[in-house]
Length: 215
Image 1 (cartoon, rainbow, N blue to C red):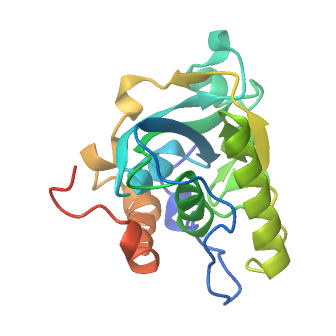
Image 2: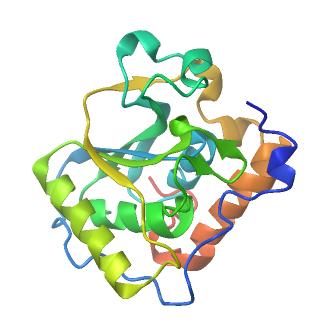
């Protein structure tokens, strides 16, 4: 897999909405005490992690693999595209500060293009597919309802191809993948793919952006 070079030509966020204002989810969870986890896959986990680390109420983001077995949850194997895994992020969030539906809005509006099947920008393969791995029935209902809402509103030029699947396991990626964008801001892939997404988050969803020194 080549990330540097192709990333200079294609941007992960290239095709977004068809001009319509992006809606909040009509169905969402109510704010409550405590933390919860969300697991999302939308292309390279370096990019997705960078976006969610900038979202208010997010306590931790871990890059990893979901969709396959524990024995194949290793970067070199996953990169072959035949393990069933997708590059994913596990998001631990404060339910009083942000809802699951708001995390999904960031997922669809900013983090990736949900109309691309088995690829995101320069990255091609089933390991880069768009998936929402729900951890409970409430998350499943919110995710499926939001996809129907966005399709019905014609927010995207093409229909959403995001899978909604039960989470059977999340396996953290190798240490060098964690906080990759933060630790490698000058990497060309980060400059041309992750950084523009973080900038888009700040422009498109300012109320969901973590403020400086905000816990």
